[in-house]
Image (tube, rainbow, N blue to C red; front, side, top):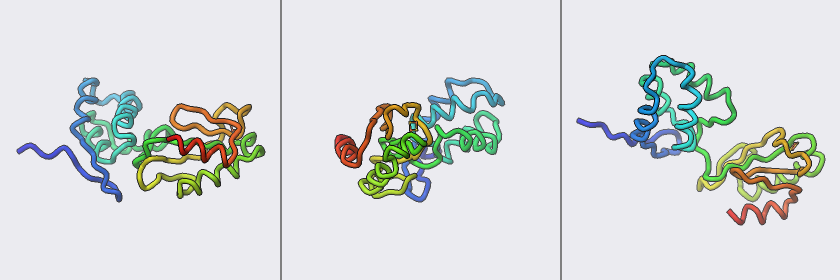
Length: 166
Ligand code: FES
């Protein structure tokens, strides 16, 4: 009997199709090679938008790499998320330059508009918000990124217009 590759996990009961993992695994024939962990995690996250716990268990078994090592990597790097993320990832800067140029008001506006805290995901999974320390574009302060797009010299009103466009 073939088991159903689609499982539900997490408190939100997110649908996860583990069948997609075979495509990733088949690209990496090596076993016991911890150098594979980062690239494979990146590919898993690209497909699912985060790192489902069941996918990590399967990855551990397939590559014969301890699950504790995989979790160690997944939790060390900020690029990885163990929770489902929204379709659009907002990275809002609260570094010094952004903070002194109104970043706090901008953050409050985003939180109020989305109805979430400074690290959270909207219930419709449209947006996730992350507060970061510097986006490397201090001359645009206060600044945020949505996916790969930068938005600078933000005000609460400007933020409202930008979010509306998504
Ligand atoms: S402090 Fe915000 S971009 Fe540098």
